[in-house]
Amino acid sequence: MSKDLPLDLFLIISSLTPIINVDLLIRNEKKQILLAWRNDVLLGNGWHIPGGIIRFKETFHQRIQRVAQLEIGVKSIKYLKRPILISQCFFKGDIRGHAISLLFDCFLHSNIKLDKMKVKKPTNGALKWHTSCPKDLLATQQFCQKFFTE
Image 1: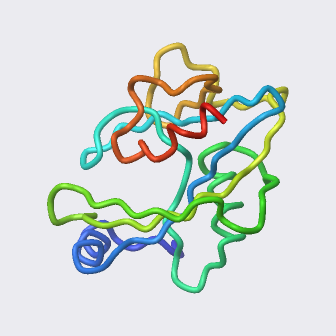
Image 2: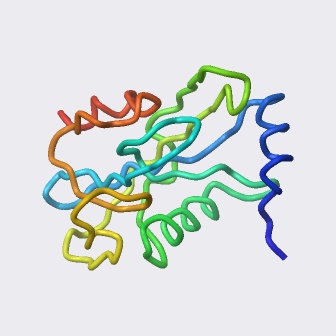
Image 3: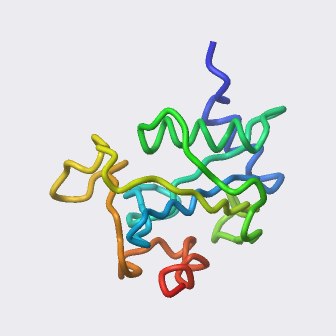
């Protein structure tokens, strides 16, 4: 049985309360940042930091590893145990209107082969290492711009 809520129920809940998620700032030894492409009806199309909504009674560790599996395609990822940034975002509209994000500093070697990197044109879920902040970064992800200059 899936732990995911039916979409209509999720949309009701997310219109009543903030959603708490973990975001993974994944860097490699070259100081590049791994971003994923998202085609999202509510948030738009563009690059974003991989992340996911924390499920009921799920730990940070469990969600971080689940995001690594689902979005990156790796079994586990190294990360600092405390978030490096806690932020909140308010979106236009009443659905998914408020998110609280816990940003975790993660590391992944650039030589690890990721299947989702083999696309030429960005499609939903595609991955790419970035050395600078892309111009088509999702507006909701603007908080991460500063990490490209560190």
